[in-house]
Amino acid sequence: MIADDLKALMRVPGLSGYEGRVASEIAGRMPVPCRSDRMGNLIATFPGTRPSVMLFTHMDQLGFVVRKIEADGLIRVHRLGGVPERALPSQAVVLSTRDGRDIPGVLANKSHHATLPEEKHLVLSAPELFIDAGHGTKADVEAAGISIGTPVTYAPNVIDLAGGRIAGTAVDDRAGCAVLLDVARHLAERHGGPTVHLVFSAQEEFNLRGAAVAAQSLEPAIAIQVDLMLACDTPDMAHLGEMALGGGPGMSLYSFHGRGTLNGVLPHPALVSLFEDTAGALDMSLQKSAQTGVLTDLSYVQLVGEGVAAIDVGFPIRYSHSSLEVCQISDLEDLSHLLVEAIGRIKSGIHLERWS
Image (cartoon, rainbow, N blue to C red; front, top):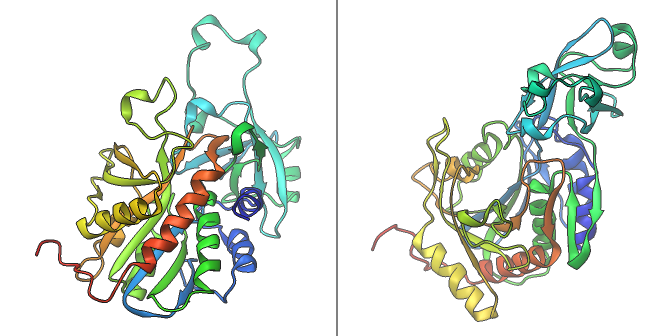
């Protein structure tokens, strides 16, 4: 079921601020009714006892926004989110119109035969690139429903790899969404346990906006965030850690952005123990992550109200923010199982003061 949900969600474009189609797809797969807020977050509540838990993941993806249409029909864009510019030329994209159509295009790459020696190893910035959607004039582009502000994302793609691995678009964080859908199905059948607010947050790739708004409204005592964790099992990443694809779910013990946004998460000790003890009881591998350059919306959720006991858990991913990210289904299945069991272990007497 997780694989089916993931593949379906990967095929739905949903740039930050334009998550409506993704939210509709998720809501149609949820076992209970959902509601949305003014930021575009999708929320489902499973009533229970105190303390309340906010379990969340983001449903948006990164991409571009149209900023100019040239007279010859070529389209200029701004980046939205951490798009890797060195991986952009020749990528297929879709431009999503207001009436729900996806118009294909390609990020142009200068013809190799005309590329000068000094150009061969240059990386063009996003403002220097242009999208070719096949139209010959600005009027043709506008007649197709494309205008300034139109959202652009990588063309949806799903590739089944060997060993239960999947490559494709927006694994970050449609994989998290698929995990939460699986958790929701278990919560819908449970008897007892804490109140759980499942949140599929909006605008995470646009400065981590949606989840903080949801937390202000829900006022949880505990926040558990699900997102990618950098797989370090390829030669280019091996020096950064020990997270491995297929090694099971992960838990972050340190995250710090360090690039402009001086924020991160040092997890709550009681929640670290909760997940370690739960994984031990399940005889499940629980990988550990400590990374700089990584930032999730939990960074802001933890600061709501009097403070929220917070922890990041997730799944290993290769090639993050590229058009073809890779994850392993067994990691997602184990993560869902871990979350369901850990939430079931949260009792009213859990000590949430940072230090006793």
